Image 1 (cartoon, one colour):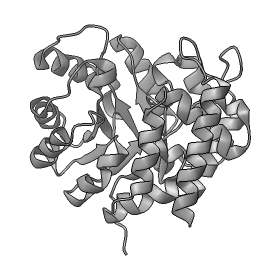
Image 2 (cartoon, rainbow, N blue to C red):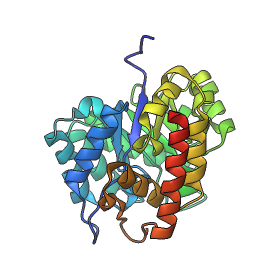
Image 3 (cartoon, helix red, strand yellow):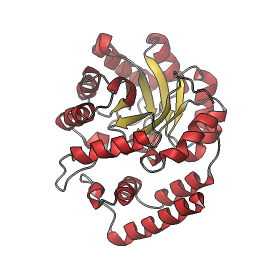
Amino acid sequence: MAIDPNRFGLSCAITTPMREGGAIDLPRLVHHARHVLAQGCDSVTLFGTTGEGAALGLPARTAMMGALIGAGLDPSRQVYAGIAAASLHEAIDQARIALDAGAKGLLVAPPFYFKGVSDEGLHAWFSQFIEKLGASARNIILYHIPSVTAVNISVGLVQRLKTAFPGLIAGVKDSSGDYASTEALLKAHGELAILVGDERLLGRAVRAGAQGTICGVANLVPHLLRPIVYEGTDDPTVNALVDEICSHPVLPAVKALVGHLHGDPGYRAMRPPLEALDETRARRLFTAFDAITRAKAA
C-alpha cells in the first residue's frame, strides 16, 4: 500500500520522563523517542497532555528539544510541539522555542484558565498568537480537549481561523472522545488533517477521512496503531488496552507501562501535583497489559 507523504500519520504524544524532584530525564526521553519511532511512529509530539506539557516551563522545553535534535532526530519531519498556556505571551514563548529549533508544527491548546469564553474571544487569542509569531508560524494544529481545558474548539472557530490564516491552520486534534464531534470536523474541514485522540474511535474516523492521530497509547503499541492509521482497520486489542488504561489515572498509567516495557521503573515518576501509581495498582495494570498483548500475539 502506497503511503501518501502528505498524510499526518501516527504521532506519539510522548511521555516526559522525570527524575524524583521533577527534573527532566533527558537520556530516558531520547531512548523512548527512538523506540517509538523504530516501532512505527512517524513523529513524536512533545509537551502534550500525556507529556504533562502544561507543567513544563521554558527551560525544560528548550532542553528536551535540544536533546532530541542532538540525538539525531530530524525536527522538520519527526517532532511536533504542544503549546499549553493561559497567558498569550507564555504560549508565544513556548512556540518560539519549538519553531526556532525546527519543529515541524505546533499542537496548540486554547487558553484554559477562564471558562465560558466565546468563539469571538478565542478567535482574537489565536489571531494574536499567530500574528505575533509572524513568518515563523507553520503547521498549526488546533487542540480540542474540552475534558481538560473546558474550552471548545468549534467548527465555526476553525472556519474563521483557516480563512484568516490560509495555509497556517494544518489540522485539528479532536480529543473530545465524541465521534459526533470528529464527524462534524471531517464534514466541514476534511481538507485539513483531522486527528483523533481516542484510539477506540480511530479506525472509524480514518475510514471517514481522518489523517491519523497524536495519542498516548502510541507510547506502548505503535506497531498496532499503524495499521489503524493507514488502513482504517479496527483492533479489539487496542480497544481493550485503552479501556484498561482508562480504569486507572491515565497519565500515571501510561508512564508506568512505558517503564514496564523498558524494564525500567525510572520512567514512572510524575511531576506534582500528579502522582505515580502505587505498587499494587501498577502490578494489576502490568498483569492486564501482558494478558491483553499476549492474546494479540497468539
